[in-house]
Amino acid sequence: MTYSEGLQWGLQASEQLVEVVIAEGGRVQDEVLELIQTEELRALVWLSLPLLDPLNEEDEESIWDFFLKAQLLALLKRTEMFLFGFWALLALILYSGVTEELFEVSVWPDQALVEFGQSLVVNCSTTCPDPGPSGIETILKKTQLGKGPQWKEFLLENITENSILQCFFSCAGIQRSRSLGVSVYQPPALVALELQPEWVAVDEDVTVKCHVPSVTPLEKLSLTVLQDNKELYRENFRSWTTASPKVEVMVTFRAQRVDDRCNFSCHAQLNLSSQGGGLFHTSSAVKLLHIFEFSQNPQIWVLPLLEVGMAESVSCEVDRVFPAKAVTFSVFLGDQELSPFLSWEGDTAWANATVRAMEIGDQELSCFVSLGPKEQKTSKLVYVYNFPPPILEINESYPLVGTEVNVTCSGHVLTSPSPTLRLQGAPYLPAPGEPAWISLTAREEDDGRNFSCEASVVAQGYRLMKTTDTQLHVFYEPRFEESGCPGNQTWVEGTEQMIACVPKGNPTPSLVCTWNGMVFDLDFPQKAMQNHAGTYCCKATNQLGSVSKDIAVVVAGLAEDFNPTLFLIIIIISSSVALGVGVAIIALYLSYWPCRIKTRSTAYRPKADNQAEENQSAVEQAETC
Image 1 (spheres, rainbow, N blue to C red):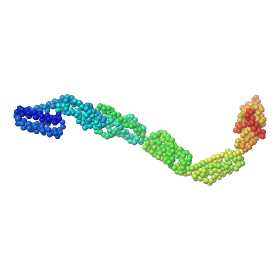
Image 2: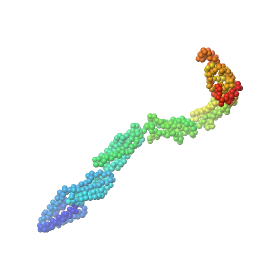
Image 3: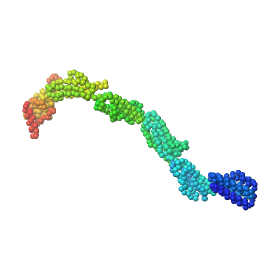
Image 4: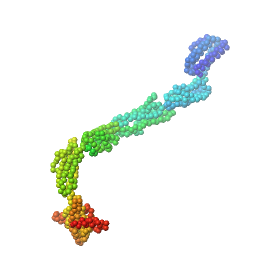
């Protein structure tokens, strides 16, 4: 029953009471009139107010109308039944408390857990068979979806904060309500991880931060910091009762080498199982921690002098560095970047490169070494010079015997400063910048003679030297010498034998030997026989001429008691008695063995028909013997 309805009911009851009093003709005692006119009557009326709706201005005016009419009734002073009517009114008010116990109000769901920004359907119902006014009181936006005799259903939209709503029903002028608490949750949609810094020097502090924006309720949240999937730190927020725009945990520890390349991550968990909700998990991206140690300055190794265009090695090295595999090198000669080859062992890393300078003068060779956020530079000044080898010239590279030969040693025109020259065999040293030379008449013994030209300069306090070598070749006609081509040779019958004859001459002469009009094979040894005895005509020829020589060959018979080994022993023993005689015997013995001739000749055995012309030409050459 609303307050207005209560007043209306009271007025109607008062009017009926007046009619009864008039009809009965009763008299109103003065005591009753005083009771009605006092504040006690007002107090009795106000006893019913807690059962009514909140007051408004119209209701307040109705209350005073009620009191005015009550005072008019008191003025009637004609009935003694008024007191009866008053107590009847009071009994009716007390009766309403009994009615209140006869109906209930219910709300569904009995507990509400709503994700941030989502909606909720609420159903209010009652056991009152004929309910009066009903509804829902809430600060949330509401829309009625449906209703029935004993229920109403509402949609609550865009729920962003916790609240308490009231479902109410009136029954027989009595109103009852049931409250429902609405809890809002927001799962951790994002977990951010920060490593400060990601590259940390040994023994410096590492800070790991995890923060979760926009999560509620905080008392159900836990944040865990993981290192290589192992729990490093965990924090719960049970004591947090107020919302926060960002929840954060921070862990700090001192970096060690064992922490290098460890994976760090954050894990957030929102557990709503106690409120009828679920378990929400979210993890951050994994970040890698790098630990480094880089306290030593790098060293660079290179020659202080570099020659233009010549490849030289350069090395850059750094010690006590960790991890050595992660070190990077950049090497420059001036603005020219080199391509180093990196190596490491233990806590040492180095880079080797090849440098080829192209400009003369002082240049800076730089080495940049980097590890994580740290970089160090070392440099060295080098001097680039140009020093081509000296020039060695012979006016006649292949002179004939008796020709005048001039040998000159001079410095290269690009050499600066002018070099000091030295020519092997020269009678004197020339002045700096002047050439060295020597003159000679070519002889046979000069064939194959080596000449050396040496040049030296001083650059940046260092003496540099370069040498050029060449060889003299003297041409002369062929000739036979007894030591190389004996005129008398003895073969032992049945042994492998060749004509022992090596002519001299430059260019090397070819040799052809004939016997009885046939060309003897000088390339392969042959088994000596009696018919091999006789005189052989040998002819040596090169581009400068030819020469011939007769060689007499004797084939000695092989006696039954002849022992070649014993023969050799006798020769060796004889050599110990008379050195000169022994040498001659040994030379004679060795002349029996094959002697390879570089020039090609025709075989002694008969030739095929297609080689007849070649044999005839060789015979014609040998006929001059």
